[in-house]
Length: 305
Ligand code: ASP
Image (cartoon, rainbow, N blue to C red):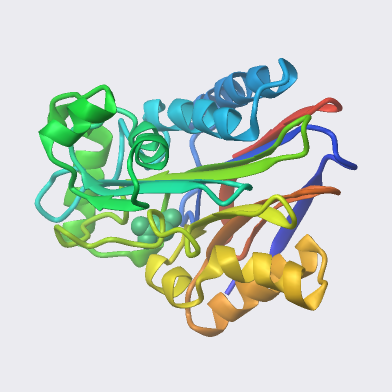
């Protein structure tokens, strides 16, 4: 198991945005073109999210702006360019939580262009938290943009699925995108979106749409977004576990995150976690070998592929 890597960004109570484009282990390094494309995509993501924070917008709006860009970029496993199920289709999951305790999530959507917008609609326009495979009528009522299911399927993901079915390699199964933010009013928010894992059985759902497992936010502690072995992140209730360590054990965000990643490793899981606390530096940490992540604050921006 690779060692845990941790990077910190930002300080005090200043606005801060951290995003991830999935954690995993690459048995072959990214090509130069692949790396350039991922850097450029992450810069676009930061620009969209930071514009909201810089204008005094809310952490929730910044998270949505950033996750939408991540979903639109074919480089990452969410929205357009999502990983495909064993049947060759994209089944998409997303969740959103703001630090005041509001949340919304969707699982198994196949026609919503930006699943994070459906999570937002569930939060704002329904009395519930999680919808599985919402109906066409619900999507119309929520006012989210829909597309043909083929929109999500790229040639690269088709070849990846064929290669995986030929020779399964769990190291290639991972991905997911997410964002955590703190705004100038001191509120935090987190959002996560995914196509799940390559070659997953139709109907399989991981941690991403589960508030508490893949996503959590509390204005008194932290905002958290996870990527990695979904089944283990669910049973460890990973995102909430980071919050609980900060809230109940008085740990700082770094210590809490490393401890949660250690527990995940002990159960043969791996992945990455991004965290923005209500006060202090935010972080990106992973124990999977590789993770796409980026951050923006008044001190500048940073992208890592
Ligand atoms: N956690 C995601 C899932 O289980 C996959 C990942 O982030 O690698 O669906």
